[in-house]
Image 1 (cartoon, protein in one colour):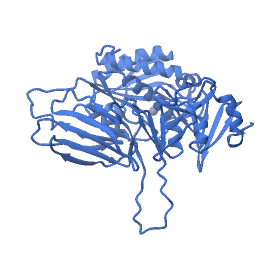
Image 2: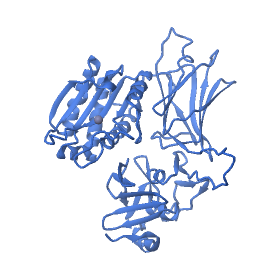
Image 3: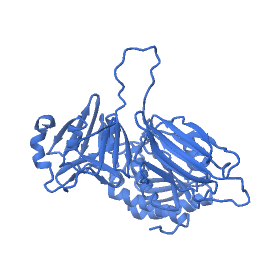
Image 4: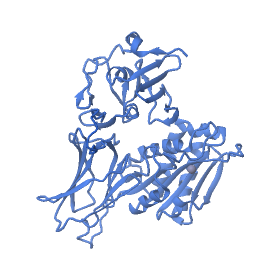
Length: 467
Ligand SMILES: [Zn+2]
């Protein structure tokens, strides 16, 4: 395999890669690395594809100063920085990180003869943390590399930057999904009454929901008469700090309860909203918890081509999440959005504490000893509501996947047994079967399956199409 060393041949290669008719206007998107704006060459376009910021590999090499090798023949991009190494291929959602296969949100693409790669993935794998301000189109990267210092008196502070993936408000609860557990600093202020929640060493991720009003985002609190406003922002840079402000209206005392489950920080504000118990209010939004099975240290089963189930479960789960986020009547909460392992009890507790309406766990089946076994199975546990949900999703999943119908079954699995709402566990197909695996790993099928799951959930919740 012949590799071109970008550092040497990059300029030559660029002659072919530079799009000939880029817009005369300069780039709208700014990239700020450690407080310094990167000066991108005029010809370089940063593009946003389905909420993923894609940057040309030229920016990766020249501006971020990572070592980049591009192999034209195999369309492979190898990026290295210190001990971090990733390998990406144009058109493939699978990437290699230190020889482990991981699934990308979006495959590298060839756009106008330029290879573009997902900025978030590349940056995070190279040890940078990433923030995105949608309004002003600003990407914030921070390296967090503290200056090498003399051994001090042992009072060094670990500065790992956490990422907020999602901020939701439903059923009187503020739910903040984070990369790692972090204890926020909560203060209350008066005139007007406010609860201020500060997450130290934390940055805003690309949350799929556009920030409005400068660097600030707002949540819909229309169902909560005692909450005037919930807004969030990247309050400080360097070190990053995310601030959420809950503005209250007409309350005699400010009460709340906090807890953290599976990386989700939950602030229960029901006491704030209860002074008028005679008129129970709800935002009218249904809470749907999507649970991509396994993750982190738990790979799940290993497929015919030796890929872990956790990758499939997350790839499909994130597609379901993206579709559900477009539904105005649904608040979607994920048990995981990255390759981490929340315990089954944590997943159950999250859904139960949120008083979710629907819980869907995503898995792939396996019988290694009988690789000929194929088909889709859907499980519920006893409850009628769960059985109905399972049936509604299953019949669509059969059509979407085109695999054998192995039926809807009662199954004694913890996540559907101990959850208290309509809960279904999907075994989308058999990863131990060659053609099932192919079907399950296909991007097209995953999109169809995600739509099938969403349509089943919507029918169960009796929600009309919102678009
Ligand atoms: Zn599983």
